[in-house]
Length: 193
Image 1 (tube, rainbow, N blue to C red):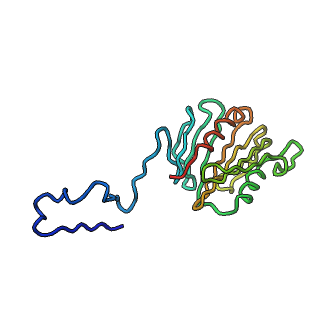
Image 2: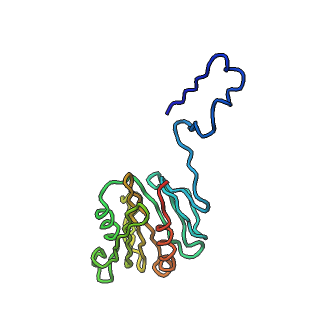
Image 3: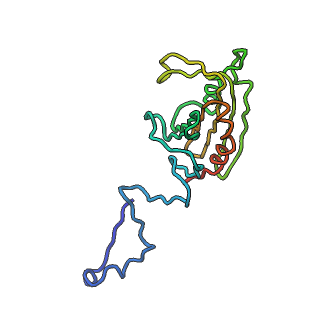
């Protein structure tokens, strides 16, 4: 966006501010529009939402993560990771995440999980929940896989017309289950900026 201000030479030095009203000009900072968040809201990418009390925002542990939260405080750690700009469809990503869990009979949890869709504000949201044996892979899926029994997954994939956001929360099931309501309330509070 460019801004050009012209005035007649005779008025140039008198009081140029009289010729410009505050609503007639949009000020940009290096081409980025200033964004104002609603009171109590936090920014995550091009979304804003109400982060529940007690959730601790952390510096993302790698560059693929848009945001990262410890939602369980000092108890057994439940970590919420937010991604954006990753490949694959909603179903492909959900199937991959659900496929990281096995039931006690060592069957993949893809067919035994809860998945539902909602439309909230202008966003299409897919919620998912499962619990079982979590097959946690090493860094970048290259390291050894560690089996973590009695773990859970809370997930939400949030689609706008321009972008898709992936919210993946894992942790011990007995701890994670305490955060189902606050997780869903947080996701339902999300709005586009």
